[in-house]
Length: 117
Image (cartoon, rainbow, N blue to C red; front, side, top):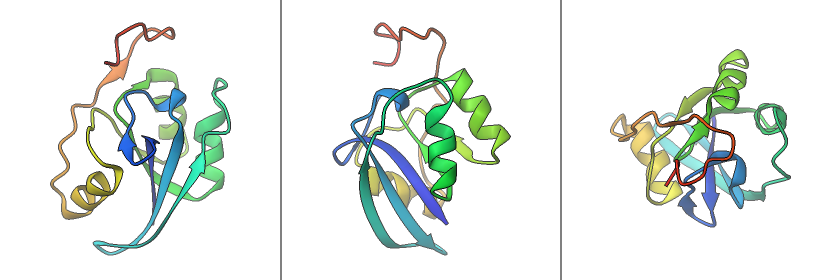
């Protein structure tokens, strides 16, 4: 299964659409078998969920995310986990172990002025 973490280098970003990169982890059972980082190709309404779906991602982890993106991911049967902090790899390992702490934070305004921080 592929898990994407919206990141600033190796740290979970506060807002999905404006992240620097996505850390993509290929997992098998409860183990990470490979990982790679890909640059965010750009924030455009509705684009990133479809982009990650095309890469085969089944779970997206982020600090915060707008409801529009959450809805698109849900329609694509991609699990959304928000309100996560810390290192991307730790988040994935905790997810696989069933111990990931997440708040489910949703950004309610497109401008995100200090709302996701």
